[in-house]
Image (tube, rainbow, N blue to C red; front, side, top):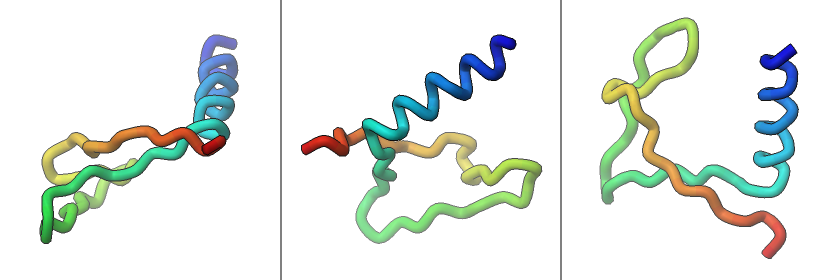
Length: 53
């Protein structure tokens, strides 16, 4: 039940905001083959921008 509630909250947040990756100039992410897509550093740096603007 909590998992479904979490998915609901995340879907509402992602409808209002969009995640924009933050990368240094000229740097490409190196993906690792895994069950879920991951960056080699294990952290995707991103910021969230409001979609309503």
